[in-house]
Length: 387
Image (cartoon, rainbow, N blue to C red; front, top):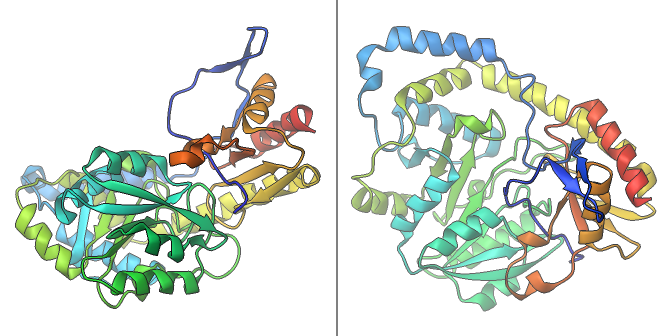
């Protein structure tokens, strides 16, 4: 696979970039791949729901809640997942947690300590770091145009595989149904094998028909499904959910019964009503249209870059990738962009193992948090830097 490397690792950067002479250039446009647009969020609706929940809930809302999350919220999430992603589950299979980090930490208690796990390479660095903090043995598996290769998975001798089939981060690869079925076949071939499906931003797709989740095709209870509202609503919501196969649900109840809920009952009730009353669906539809307009503008502005760059990952999500055709290194692309006051993000940091030593030529351009004029300004400055 042509290099599609590096990931924004979430590290804080300085407000400006230094030129070779030491002068600091203020950051004018930041193409962060993790930023979202909150300008159209229905804050008045959220405040109204919050007020209603507090006025009607009484003292019970301040009592300790169900460790798996409020049952009514899990019912609501289950209905949403079935209608939007084809996920088949009962409310009993859903665990609500404060972010994906917590759910992955919980998963260690469920799967056990000494697990051999496969991850795509390049991969989502944060998950890799979390698994690395366990007593897990991590094996990376190369990708092709369809995602994680099953041949590589078979050679890795693992019992679990972490994949992002709907929109792989950071490459943007959409895993076709054939590859998904191959992964399920691998999981079904031996007891104790599981696929961890991270469906982090499946709501934002711009081309082709939506493909149901990997879990929707699972008939043997081999898929652990993880999702979040951080991209679709707001990062500060900090509400994620995990759907466990029945076998692992029993293990959760036996080994994790003493853990407390990590999301307040008030926040859960507000989110439940936001979804149940249709506000979430209306907001999603509005944001899909809004992000697509940004996506289309970015591609239009990139038209004169195509002789010098290959554009990839443009079918979904809130970022795309540019790979230089003229031999520019990733480091050079970042430095020349910084000299113009533009922040772009290389992809080589998402590589792990020996592949990390390979020189990168690809950068990430995120557009979710930028306004239309910012996108135009940023691309105008990148023309000066790169063309």
